[in-house]
Amino acid sequence: MADTVPIIDAKNLRKVFNGTTAVDGLSFQLFPGECLGLLGPNGAGKTSTIRMVYAFSPMNGGSLKVFGIDIKTGWREIKARIGVCQQENNLDPDLSVLQNLELFARYYDITKKDAKDRARQLLQFIALEHRSEDKVTSLSGGMMRRLVLARALINNPEMLVLDEPTTGLDPQSRHQVWERLELLRANGLSILLTTHYMDEAYRLCDRLIIMDHGKILVEGEPVDLIRRYAGEQVVEIVNPGPEVREFIQTSGYMHDMLDHRIILYGREDDNLFELIGEKFCTEGCIKRMATLEDVFLRLTGRELRE
Amino acid sequence: MIDLLQVRNISRRFSRVWNRNLVVYRKIWLVNFLVPLLEPLLYLTAFGVGLSALIGQVPYEGKELPYVVFIAPALLSITMMYNAFFENTYASFVRMYYQKTFDAMMATPLSLEDIIAGEIVWGATKSVIATAIMLLVVSLFGLIEYPQGLLILPLSFLGGLAFGATGMVFTGIVPSIDMFNLPIFLLITPMFLFSGTFFPIDTLPDWAQSISHVLPLTHLVNLCRGLALGELHAGMILSVIYLLLLTVIVFPIALVVMRRRLIK
Ligand SMILES: Nc1ncnc2c1ncn2[C@@H]1O[C@H](COP(=O)(O)OP(=O)(O)O)[C@@H](O)[C@H]1O
Ligand SMILES: [Mg+2]
Image (cartoon, rainbow over all chains, first blue to last red; front, top):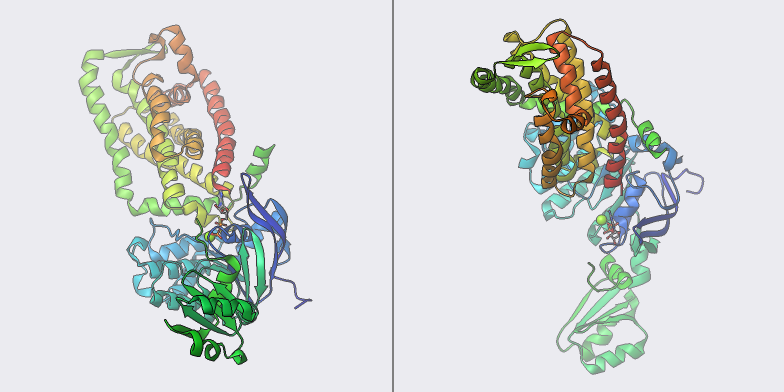
């Protein structure tokens, strides 16, 4: 990928809000056709980062090129070529479903006729044709989110920026959104997204950045990250006694010691479950695959944020 | 310097923002038309029939005018002020703060300055529409001289820009929507009463006259009355300059305060 121009080329991005640093020297790239996920606890700086990428917030430091264009001078062209789903559903409540798309198209200088055609196609794509004349306030949360997605596609963008696309949706609606995003990805659209859902990140993203306090903690493909930071197999020991605690502390295995639970990370051939199970599993042990959630919690800690 | 740079961010795309507001306006055009249609009838009945009997003629520029002839241009001027000021305060604030319409727009090629310019020009457009309807009504009573009276329409656009941009400055700084009560109580209501609207300024004591001459509505009323009576005079040039200057000064301030408020 070294000789292709990256869609996003961010170097040392900084964002400061009256003294507090929200983004602290972030560098990353997004390559054509790739889906990159930004993960991080609340307040990690995800929204602040992508707001700079779609030229909503000015940066306090660093350099940023999108499509090879410097964002400081070419912001209008860049904005014309990307689609954005902001964290909040800011659909226009004064307009109908169809008008939300048609008038948004006009902000991109799309002609009235093309706007109409494109709006109809997109309503079909998100399965909302039957609601085209309704007020947006009458839509369910999932429908609104799909409409926001459709609106972000109105200009046939070359890159899509999604800030928590499925937060607050029921499982059915989340899968509806995911299916659409997978279709778009298959068509070669480059995607930058933030999410709190590890299953979403795992399913949609080619590459992930886990960040906290405005800095990158780790970066890599989901499977690699799991292997590196949580192994392959996990055994959770419920209400462990003192013997098992001591055994694990001296055993050298990757583990997390919690108040009422020990989580043990190992490789497939470590046979952890067999090792622990026979001796110590009095109250119960759970054997499962390692997940991104393990990686996330291990790297960002288990304390509550905000 | 910063102001000048910001003005440069305005492109012809501001008309898309204007168009969005027009589309919404047309949805309930009947309600929107009803107010300027009926309001002058209310005022003319109350003042023309009721108060006229007490007041009779009003001395203005060396002539005696029937009271309804005197206040008709004031009603038009007040309409210009109200339509633009309320559109760019309450209505713009709702779009900005509650509906997040501006946030969504800022993810498109529109600049913040396009959005604010579109809003202010829309406020001025509402002023023109309302003035046109009201002008039609008062003309039926023979209260307007033509063709000079036609110039009231471009005047309503200028007045709309001046009052809309002023309203937008408040939208950029008020912490909550209730706070608009303050500029309305301190500026709009005194102007409504003391800008030569319902009685000539000359009847006021000198100090009050001086204050009155600083109020933008005084100049709008002065212009509107001259046009409605078909009597243009030199003082009107000063009033035009005053309103142009006000617009040219307040408009960039609106851009600055809105940028401070919305760009994070
Ligand atoms: N407009 C703002 N003004 C002041 N501080 C802000 C603003 N937006 C975000 N922050 C702060 O910046 C940090 C990062 O926030 P954000 O980028 O929204 O995080 P995330 O999207 O990862 O939850 C937080 O500490 C947040 O409080
Ligand atoms: Mg966020």
